Image 1 (cartoon, one colour):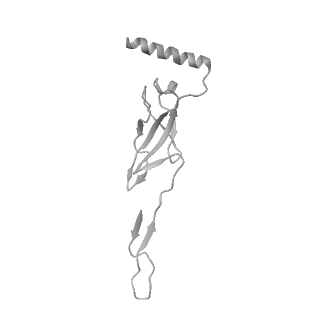
Image 2 (cartoon, rainbow, N blue to C red):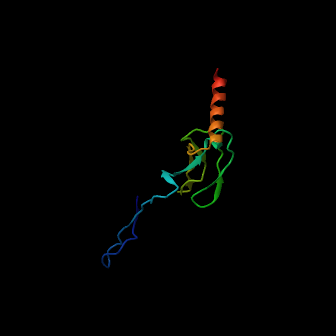
Length: 130
């Protein structure tokens, strides 16, 4: 983005009006937040065990370092964005939103007991559909 401030530049010679000042603005990459206009997006990683029941209101940091709560609905799906209004970029007296993008992480290296629990859960879902 380029911002122009009229009359705030250098005066080339005595008796000649000051020039304009141009400010070049570059938004740098952030390791946790991606910018989409005035909205910010950040991931929230959940296990299937946390994504299926009502997760509740996990604490999440906003870009200013304050803690906000996200209302994650039960059965939330991969890639769904949960919106926290007014926690995005503040510009021209307005605020964007903070979008918490759900990432459901499939566990690796599970124990025999965990594998058995998943198998029993699958069997109960198959029975429900009959």
